[in-house]
Image (cartoon, rainbow, N blue to C red; front, side, top):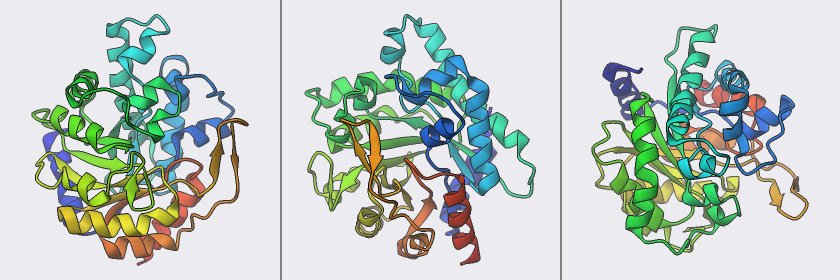
Length: 308
């Protein structure tokens, strides 16, 4: 379990102004190693079936230059695993394991000269549904119902001792409001990250409104965007920094588009390491990649940021 001193060090590292490098996409790294992620549990399935593969994926990103690894718990929920017949006790074990696997990877890194941190991923309600609604929001649930869904998982992840909770890929400000309620009192800092299209959340709310929800929440140490096009990052960084005054977190996709019908990626990558220096200059302090951004790109990001 991570000590309070280590957690404070992460918060202090953000406050000091130096950028930290996040990892890249967990799913593409696992798929490149030959693992099939085509079912509804996505990468979370490997927590139960191939945990060593998860550790190896984290290690690849740490060795590539990442300072922070995000756990494979994005799609790991009590409700999702229950559909496979797993008990709540077993699901709680797997959620805790997701943090320990990332922590184990830190112990295997050859370069011990820099601190390494673990962010526990908390995906949106729509990730559990596995029907694409994580990119739409508007689930038909109240804020209180969404809070009740998220709180048990958050409690288990917080107890496992991550350095930060990654409340990520949120399509809707209402779900963000629920998660901000749910993290209260857990004793672990969090970042809040939306998936966006242009200057709005996927559900259509203005980013000023969406980021503003976190401005006065003490538990939130960074706000930003992820799982979006690289072209959407610049504007979001400026708004997040201005509205909240907090460090900004950004980790976009490669820029390719997902074709749900063909279940494949289309187009070309538009994410370049050179873009990150501009994001850093605008206020981003946690910078990495999401879907289709692999270890090679993370090495490029780390070189660009540390060189700057």
